[in-house]
Length: 564
Image 1 (cartoon, rainbow, N blue to C red):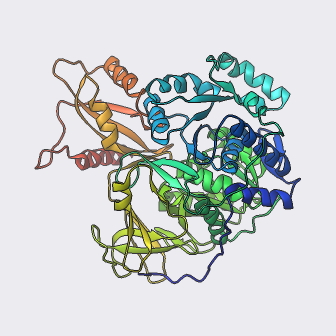
Image 2: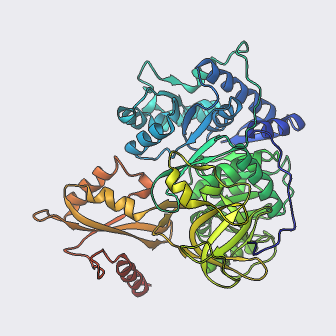
């Protein structure tokens, strides 16, 4: 089965994610675990906070195997909650805070979450989502200002925080800061229990077939990733170094690389709750992080920030790109930018899926082969099979990328049928992940990604499945049918354009567009909403009567070429 020989093997410790962090904290108690807008927290304090929150969860009746949803941006409360749940053996159900109301209901139902942690600005949406949840859920409400220094806290409250002071407004819900106070010393923490086959984290993805699925991941998956990634990046990560942690925790890339991999090596996470080009550039200049990781849109945005003009970025030891394909043109531009700013590195591209946490392949430190996504991580093996079969193809031939290794998910939550299609045991006795992506490998083991087999639009690093979005649009009373495509966008890489055929008698004006968008906001995440709506009397069809989305894509490409 193997297309590439692995020269490195790693012995993965059989301990929990919490224990990995606890171990580094014991060795480096005074090292800074994370920084949040200037407020720094040492590893010893971080572990103490985790244990207090863990005791609070136990006091609230949360036990091993129970699910709690974290619907948060990158904040200290989200970090503490994540590891506290791991400390008690509970499941962290990670959800995008910009998810639509109906999506949050779905995530709470399928995971059977008993609690949900969210920030006060999203409280009202989360509270409304509980109307469609089939069991009781307590909302834990975090406030940004609670983690800021006194001056910044007052500024934040005056600018934004004042609008959400009234939340929580239900007697069943509680502020996070009051909740953790219930974790008193008399509450006994359980022994740490490592189970290689127990779900510790649920992340959400469209999956390889485009329908929403919960991806069940383990302590072993995340700990293996942390060690594999460091072996592959070739940088000695140690206390004193810093990572600008902007990729969100509800994303495999954010949680697996920007948070867990960094923490277990004693590196400081500089937390950013959301991406803003100006703020990101300012963070680079003032905090001087040694590593940055993000989607292509982040790095593209840096090229145009006046704040970085003439600035020295020689402190950068690594820049890693994932979540979307890095074009040859953008890589050249970013590498030139780095050189002009005294950085002795190049941007390196990773490839992976949430079904294996995140990256499982990375371009080597000093070698780049055009259009290659690099070589597999240690203990991870790639192969190329003829689509629709298990037949392994020779090097150089194009087919479906499959892979096997220690980061493969346990399966999709409550979806054995899709799990069986995606995880398959082959003749070598190993379980392989079928990615749904087309690609090839060369004789030296370099992997080349071609395209998704299934329709998918990647915008700002997030997968949006057109079929799913079209179903929601078509359910609007004004709409006869629709088709969604991705069109190139300088900021998002791709933006979503919806072509819509209206029902007879409906006027296609701006008011109609807004009405459709207002309807979609209840069930579609903000990042997945169409940025453009174009009304047509009809759409091109295939011979079998399906909408010919490829013709619309070609039309958009021609339009861009003409405008370019």
